[in-house]
Amino acid sequence: MELAFVEVGDRVWVCRQEWFDLNLSVVAGTASVVVIDTGASEHNGEALRDAVARLTPLPIRAVVNTHEHFDHTLGNAAFGEVPIVAHEVAAANTVAAAQRWIAESPHEPRIEEVRASRVLAASETFASVTVLDVGERQIELIHPGRGHTGGDIVALVPDASVLIAGDLIEESAPPAYGADSYPLEWPASLDVVTSLLPAGAVVVPGHGAVVDADFVNEQRDQIAAVAETIRSLAADGVRRDAALETGAWPFPREALRHAVARGWSQLPRGSLRLPMA
Image (cartoon, rainbow, N blue to C red; front, side, top):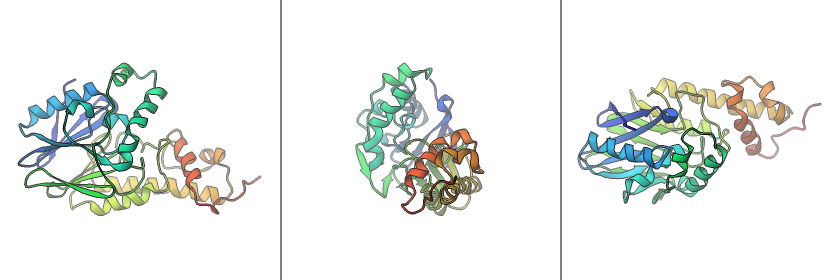
């Protein structure tokens, strides 16, 4: 597995790898680099480590996980003693998230490669904001709130006008609402993200092609429409098991099964009406 990078901003490189259409990012300063997300297996992480060495002679200051899902974290072990940084919730859930996906995905073509990977959670965690200094450049790591998971973070490189969004934004598929998502809170988290975007920002989604602020704003509005449809249907007394067929949704219904289930479970007490006959 040989990985190729494209520079999307000053000393900010992205590899859009074919496996899971996943983006792996590298940000360099004058003294060191930071690697953001590490791939879906330890072997994937080894290929990433080797690609970074070809990209720059600078040492790796830290590895960052944008959230806990296995496709973003299972390469962690390939980086040896390099500190791994993540939100505290993501770090706490990394092992369980990998085990759950492995148990639920026996027919994944590369499942043995995934199973053979050591699961290594972050060694350095934060709750809200932290900064990594890579030499005459700072990378801001920010938890904007819950959305795709409870431990999502974004990485902002202000002087390069680049924001690495993890799976809070996806380009190649509808946003991934999983069994650990927060569909009602996701729009507010993206409001924070949009407030961080500098003029002319380049945004690296978790999966797919690099996008701009207009794309982020459009996807934020679609995610908000999902949340508002859940609230509206529940207030109208629509049964949860009828919601997908009843609502007008901005994404394909098959992508929203967990969104509806999670959304209903997260509605505040008093917002549900008795089901209509």
